Length: 132
Image (tube, rainbow, N blue to C red; front, side, top):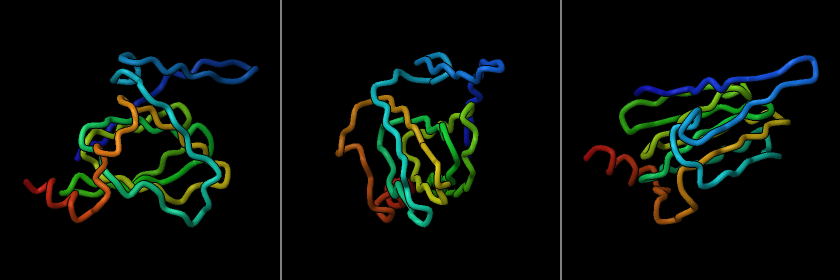
């Protein structure tokens, strides 16, 4: 499994830093939805799903969290802790997020609007479908 971390260009000086996110430029798809997670307790795991079609880029804009990514054949665990780096999550990739720092703000950019029918929420179903 190949995981793609997108290096986002950081601009800044003594006043601070800025990262611009632009669809079809540094974000490899049209952006239709943006959401963010914050205030997640340290021992909580989130995610536990895959998307049939949806693609996402996750950015830890503050703090850090860990991702467990699973394509049905291989699992990769990684730390997301750089506000100038985005994790591209392709469609049909099981994801779990955990080990959130107390100050973590995790922003997610998606290529489509929320659609419950796009979710695979059962790991057993995910494994079944991914082995076809």
